[in-house]
Every structure is written in C-alpha cells, then in structure tokens.
Length: 267
Image (spheres, rainbow, N blue to C red):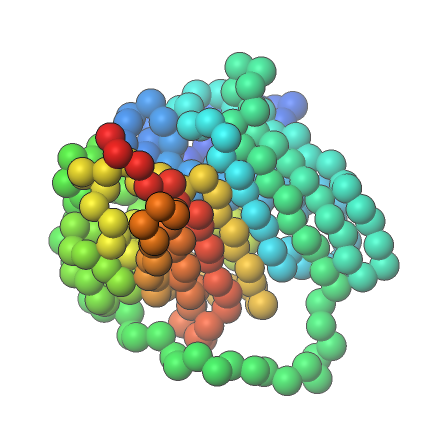
C-alpha cells in the first residue's frame, strides 16, 4: 500500500465514533468534487457488513449496493442489521445516511465456507500480467483530484479511460479505506468494483448522461493481494438501458464478477 502518497489524504475516511465517518477529498468522484465515487462508500458499507455479528467460518459471497442519491463528501453514518440468520447462510443489510437522508443501501449474503475438498472449477483463462508503472490516467472533463488519483491504474487493454472499451485494467488503492486500519479482501474489491463500467467505457458519457444505479459484487473466493484486475464490457439496447459486466481477478486468477445497471439518457 502506497499510503501517504504525495498530495493525497491519509485515507478515504476517518472514523469519528458511533458509526460516523468523516469523508476525505480522496473519496470525490470524477463528476464533482462534492459527490463521492461509489467505490469508497461501497467498501465502507462492506466493512460494516462483514464486521456485523461476525461468525468464524463465514464469508461475504455477494453484495448488492443501491445508490438512490449521490453520496456527498461529508460526514456519513453507517447502520447495519441482520435480516435473516441461519446455520449456513445469513442475510445482512446496511445503509449510509447523510444529514438524515439515505444515500446508499446494501444487502449481502454471508455463507459458510465450502469444504476444503471442493473442486477448483476455473473455466476462465488467467489474467494478463500486471503491466509496469504508467503515467496518470485521466478522463475527459472529469475531476481527477479525488478517487481517480487515489487509485493506481495500469491498463492492459483499452489504453485508458478515454479509449472506448471493452477494457482490462489492474488497479490498487494508494490510501487505506479507514485511517489506521488495514483493508480486507472484501473492502479492496468493493473500492474498485464501481469502476467496472468506466474501465469498459463504450457509451459516450460526454454526449449522454450515463450513470449506474447499482453495483453487485459476487465473489466465489476472497481476493488476495493489493492489485486487482477488472476485465469489463458494456451491453446496451435502444429504448432499453445499459449493462456493464466485469470479471474480477487477482494475481492467482478469477475470483468474482461485477454487474452494474446503467441509466442512459439525453443530457
């Protein structure tokens, strides 16, 4: 982790107690310095979901996040509860609120870990090798002094955000999610997951309004290491909507999928 990178805050968030967190400027998304990229708050909710009444031998296998409102760069409150508890599965849900308004919702399935003799079914090819260091990647018309700069990006296919997808990119955080705390495999994956459709920019977001309403991350195993790879592509239909689907890899190979619904509208 390259924590303390020049010009960046020490983390995405600072814990201020009682389920409240102060957002730093590193959370700001590409479209406004006042609104967060959905990656960091997704990870903040994921952190709470995996900590809530945690049980040995259980893991988060799937998280779906809904984004009813932009998440402001400001103080946030996180609340979590158990919807259903069971011997082998648990359904937990949480929300992030700001100023009394819910700005992000999440539901997650925590499941018992599979037996050690479960076969390793891996139909996907291994990911492309991690490229060497690259110059900073920009996005036309975007605010770059936030999340985009707080992540290190290395594109394999697509050449960068402004090159039409599909795309393949490795990425890692330059700062931790919460100051003074180590990140977990789940929070690292969620910090990146909402960037899926940006890696696969295929709809012209400069001429049209293109935003995702949600993000689902499904993991058949926990990712390992700081570097994660997204291989993403977008589908869309006239009089329909967009759908961005990505594969998530780490250095050991395939570990999950990311799915996002895209609103496509005239500006």
